[in-house]
Amino acid sequence: MDESLILNRSKYAPLIQQMIANSVGARVVTDKNVYQEGSPVNKPLLKQIVSDVLLPGSGILGLEHLLELHQIALRKKACLILMEHYSNFDIPNLYELLERQGEKGQEIADAIVSVAGVKLNEGSPLVLAFTEVFTRVVIYPGRSVESIDDHGKRQEAERRRARINIAGLKALNTLRREGRLILVFPTGTRYKPWDPSTGKGLREIGTYLKFYSHMVTVSINGNNLLPNPNGNMDEDFIQKDLVLYTVSPVLKCSEFRREALRDSADEEEGTKQRVVDGLMTALARQHAQTEEKRRAMLASLGISEP
Image (cartoon, rainbow, N blue to C red):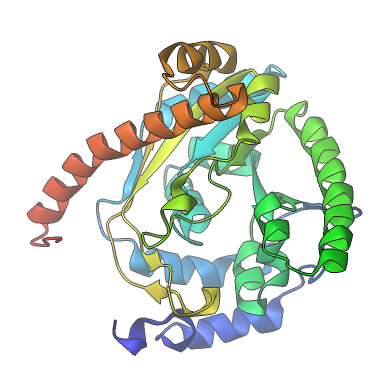
């Protein structure tokens, strides 16, 4: 791929450098700072980039379902947004498209709190400069510990993970009682086509479905920040694309769990994993349906995809 499309060497590099200079986010996550309120300082700069790479026609299908979920959350019900994850622009794109909807879209954007991994704070100043724009609760994913080979370091990481995740759970419990919408990526990582395991839902997501009341699933079609198989997140490939977010009707979590377990043929899998597998199947079906619409929209713009 053309090197000019690498994020930190692209035409957006001056804006990105200014964002890094402006950054005020925590470079180290502890159990004392897992809740991180969005910082507005870099919002106008990020908006310039995101607005430029979202092709005309990009939008949110089923916005009315998010509006309904928000009203349920305001009645003190615990509400989840379960969203596919393809890039570090998934959240910036979502907020941009919500804010284009006017007052109602802005209300939803203001209500969302994303669950994010520690890597987004600690991995690179560039990624932190993007991430800190949006309100989130930081957790320490199990995948990050599994990659540590040294026994002593792994034990210390496990202890740190426990402290951070206990604090994160407490923060989420408070926020969900305040009418906030909790956004979770079921895979816990961006999907990378060369690594099929990144498309598998995490067993831990089954716990969310057990303790939350209502949910929507959100599929994402189109990607304007492609993961780089040979580089870190600073070196992802930025491109213009038509991006569609599709929101399912509001579902009761308890009913979704029952349906997923009823439809599951794999009795050997644990209950939580069977529920999460059902969730990933639902997201894949939703994604496939929207892709047909998206390709037709691209064709109308004179753009074809392989």
